[in-house]
Image (cartoon, rainbow, N blue to C red; front, side):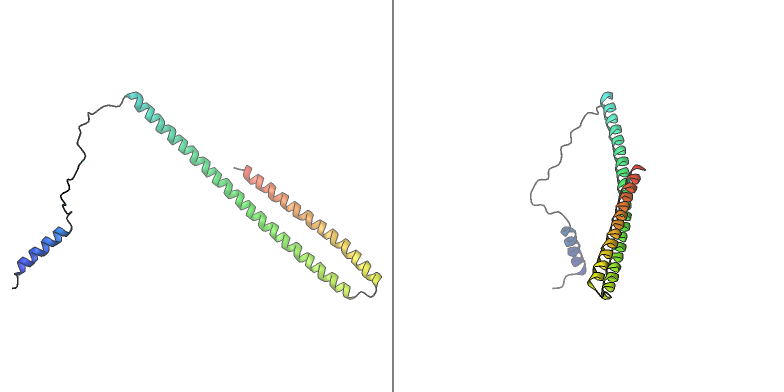
Length: 160
């Protein structure tokens, strides 16, 4: 009724061993045929050609690596220059917007004190002339800034 402990251990060991074994389904196992190739020496011309090919490939790889590193460096410098220039340009645009907003509020404040139509026309004419001069100076400053950015970018590209 109860099996001896030795029999149980033997069955357990047999099951554990058989669970990791590859089952045999009656399919023959094929192996690569073992063909004895003669030990042949490669001709010297082929060896030299192979060595030259490897040397040429290594040289081309080194040149390509150097060129890609130079291109990456150029792109990095260009993007740095452009980012700095764009930030300066944006700051200038913000400064211009503040100046124009202040001028508009000053003009509105002066309009509140107008007593006659002639005074209104005189104030409006003076404001237009003043604003035209301011906008002209602002456009000139923006053009100068854009020119400086382009020149700095060209200089950074040329200074490899």
